Length: 186
Image (tube, rainbow, N blue to C red):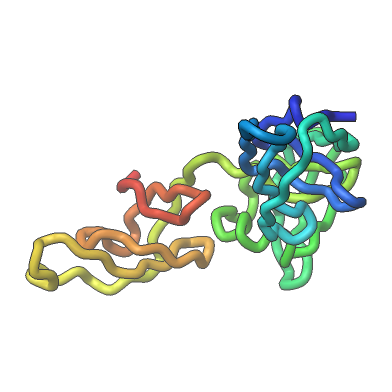
């Protein structure tokens, strides 16, 4: 069991039979009444974020998590297929459950698959990835009044991000995986 006093960002807990990841939490001790913990939780099954408040000292079942090194093989439209790098065992994860993470993952990329209570759940992505631009409009000098500006660019994984006007097809760009923001040329 895990108490509200032991919560940390990234912990997985079970609340009312549903597994959540703690996104953020805040201990609140009002002048009058009992202390409580305000949390933001992400549901592991579909990624929805909810706000929930617990009394201080409330206990939850701690969820066993394990990250395994795997290779992303391919996605066939319904499932994403991975191969364990050590045992060469293959697993399939429903594609809609990890669609956001797959935007930044190419076939044959090494990935960390997070297993919750022995079941594959999601991918743990690095903070940023380097991908090649496969399609974008040429940037024309003088397109903007201030000299800056952005244009949409399609990356090799199919993800679309906004990049500065000087980025061309074939350039490699560094993208932040959490927000999808352009960081720099690679």
